[in-house]
Image 1: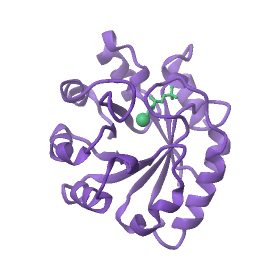
Image 2: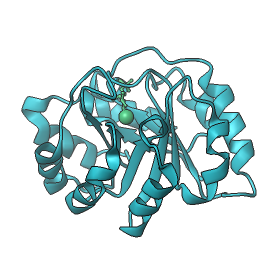
Image 3: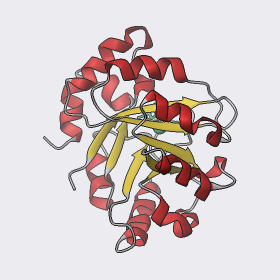
Length: 216
Ligand code: DX5
Ligand code: ZN
């Protein structure tokens, strides 16, 4: 499939949020990536429900919500009600991942699971049928603008080999430090969705940056 670009709103100008949402609406980007951080699972606090509600009001593309919070089961229904299309939880934050993924799917959302850089893709072996998207963190979660961890390429290849013939519809997403220097190599390795925060919103022209990462 053609790869998707998901600009991360974490890198947008929060004082001009509607402007930046409209920028993504008007671009060649495919999804909105929304990073929710609780200050416990990760050492940062980003934004929560009221901000997502405001974004959803203007967004004309699917909402890809990345929960960097402990015990995300508490809020699955809330994020569904807010309009999340993809809801991603962290493997490291779930004691009962299978149950959490089932709950997400039962509400009609795509179920995603994110892995920190230190977590092997092998831990997903027994839930591959229950997952719509795997988000491989290519930085330690918590902040935008960090450097891409090169080991991610081999994780993409290993995960793609695991899913082939098992769950061919599963999307592999890469999150952190993605930009013009590595998008192509990630797609070649088997990535389907590229999150792009700084490389979108810090670019001289975000529309041009998105088009470049789409290979246009
Ligand atoms: C990091 C977040 C990322 C972040 C990516 O914890 O999950 O989505 O916004 O930002 P960039 O693209 O700037 O690395
Ligand atoms: Zn993210």
